[in-house]
Length: 295
Image 1 (cartoon, rainbow, N blue to C red):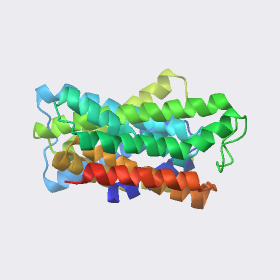
Image 2: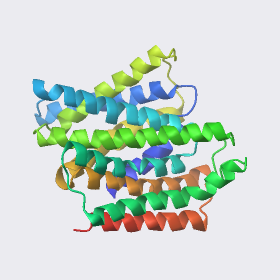
Image 3: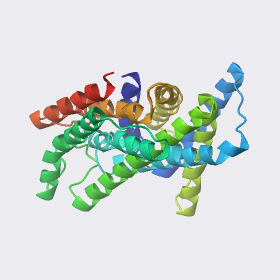
Image 4: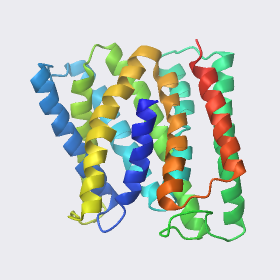
């Protein structure tokens, strides 16, 4: 629940980052800051930052996917659609984590697990169904923030970015489970993952010709501070601790609670209308979460 609260708040803070700083650059600032802070924390606790040669490619892949691509995609998504619906799509990362876990780690998928994941997907579909119909009709997204238009192309692009974020987060979670299974400390992986993810974002910005600029406004700096420290350093430690204890599929299902938090914050700060359909879908997501997490 704690990780869902942090990530749900992070969805809104990510929306606050929209402005003159390109999404790629914002991700770079966030991840490099988080990586450097985690490096200091690891040094203070006496945790080694050395990664065995055989594990370096896996740490690199995790850094590019989980700390880089997943956040690049989500930042782009919330610039096109509100943070609440974007978080709904991101919650399906649990499905991808379960599937990739089966392929990479040989994790067993039970019928109860499958039913729970199915309820999660159904809940996301129910919550989003009304907005999709509204968009098909050519109207703006119900309750969206002012920066979102009714352009169907932009909305589809936003959904595609959010789906890419879910896939990258799910695969990155499985790689993280593999790295922890090899005995790598969470602080070590988060340090290098953050720095690799930040470098990936900055490299993509430079290659695509986007300017490296900074927004000194209180809104941007405060949201960056929240995203780098509670929503990254603290949250990554909590999240990958869950991965170690309960496995990547079930840990990623914590994402199912993220949209509930994000929708509540969107309601409070972005004017999102919480209709009966949205509330019904949220209940379905919670039911799936309980089913998956039951022992």
